[in-house]
Image (cartoon, rainbow, N blue to C red; front, side):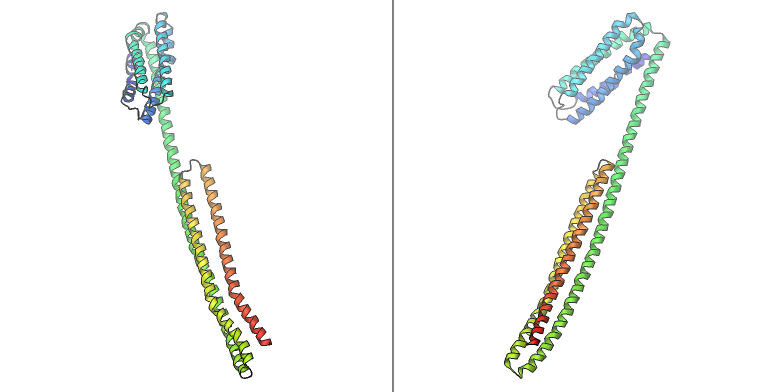
Length: 340
């Protein structure tokens, strides 16, 4: 590429961005922000390449100093207008007018380059000097394009790693939720066994009470031959024994009901925590945040486990006391009756 071709081709990308910006409406805020950022990058690049590689070569020739000064001033004016556009709200009704003003300044700069600067360059620069400038500009452009490609690849790789990490965290959360559900089922089985054992204890107590009541009945039958008063005293603990026998299944049923409610509460709490944790993990923006979320989930799971264990223990102890107290009272009454 010659220096003539380079200067003539330079504005193409900027003119394309100007045209796209001119087609946007006041409501297209995000589009305007994106296009303006691309335009600034393009105009900054052109100005930097001119000021670093072209203008120093032209300043060596006294007859071109004024043209170079005018070109530098054009670049300054372009930067000022770009800064004003960036500060301006993108839905401002004056935004389009300011874009038009910047476009007019840029296109005038391009016309000056083609009508005045380019002929002067051809006149004063040797072919070797012009080619050296061209090669430096093309090399710098190639470096910038390569840096852009590498940056884009790094962004894609980072996005891919974040996506994979989020997928792993979500998978781990699902696995943890499955483990919690399996633990819930195991706890339910343990609780069921506990209730079953409690029912067996109740049944054993009831059998003992029946035997005690039968023995009391036999004593009452013998005592009835001797005196009606003895019969009345013996009959009273028999009635108490029947009442105790009736109450035992109720105690076991209440304990089973309480244990079931406790397990349902625990399963709902742990499942809900797992679902919320999975969502929060998928939204975590850094490994540190993921570690914090995992630590909190583990702590919540441990607290929930302690809570359900404590509740089931209390239910079991209360049921045992409720079952044993009537039997103890009945035995005490039987002892008192036997002593009379």
